[in-house]
Length: 308
Image (cartoon, helix red, strand yellow):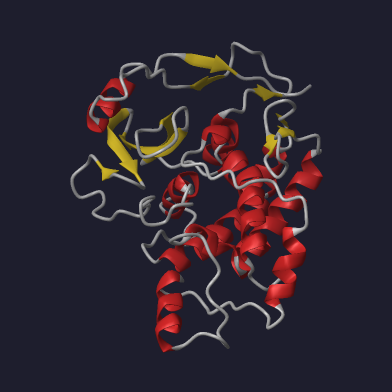
């Protein structure tokens, strides 16, 4: 469906969380990406989210490397700890309430700085950066080496289907999952970007919008976003959509589902471990203090396996 309605946008949010946030936030999927596209400058890292996100959520960052030495971190929300590394804030959850794209921001920055210069760049333009994310994921899906490694992930009882009211484990095989990812990318490109901008609503119908409303709609859309409008029969469409059994919106201010992958095919459990942070700090502790505390607890690891 090419026409943007708020009901379709809410459904897209659940589809995106299921097939983009969750999967490409998975520690083993990101490990596969790092294997196929090595980058000595950055390491893909996950930490427990701070006060800006829901309790128990995970947040994806980059660890800035110099050889084997860790210089600091880069975060799409807080910027970075290394002088000169960045001066921009890309993710503002107080402005864009559905922006849970930290795994995509970090992947885009990671991949665009590798020797594979064909990946698009990270930008602060809220529309353009999402289009660059779509291009990035499509390029990953075109890489046979990545797909070969991706197909070895045992996602049974790990990845969940958040499109339904009571999320259950995805029972799909990898080929249908890849097809769903591509479908979500198509929707993201056509109208889904509105979900991650401001209040996550479609712009008003252009035909009915006055000069002030039109200006507001342009502001709600990203800086370079096209005007996507509803059809003149949008009221009937929304009335019909309201009668469907639509799962409630599950806005998640972090990426907790994304980093939960635990199993792989055909590999000894103790041979490959996934680093996890073990942060147990008081909620009242200053956020910057939390980050320093996290670094002291990164020795705790969970085993991962591959399918036979």
